[in-house]
Image (tube, rainbow, N blue to C red):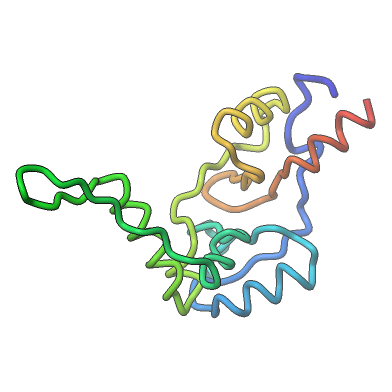
Length: 154
């Protein structure tokens, strides 16, 4: 994989997108039908407003984490990290629409970003896909699978 190759050379441009007002079940069906692990969420003008991924969909059927408390001088104090995780997963578990469950303002990169920079970002931030945005419009998406195919192609 040439490290300086722009992501535009390997990104997927035949995009499957969904609107924020669609149901979470609709998003799950689209992901299953198209064999993808996430969908960019766009508004009517094609602007990226979020990203819904498998984890956002399956949280509905997962056990919610227990809130974390400590006892201090006879009082129970909720730990902030436990509270944040609980609130996030609870919000997604009761989400009716994609807008409720999606990750708002997902990380994006422009089409000229090098594959080296994309790979580094994905590894450093633990993401499996990055929307590609130019002038505010969604123009593509790149996944870890796209990077693996680029590496295999040499």
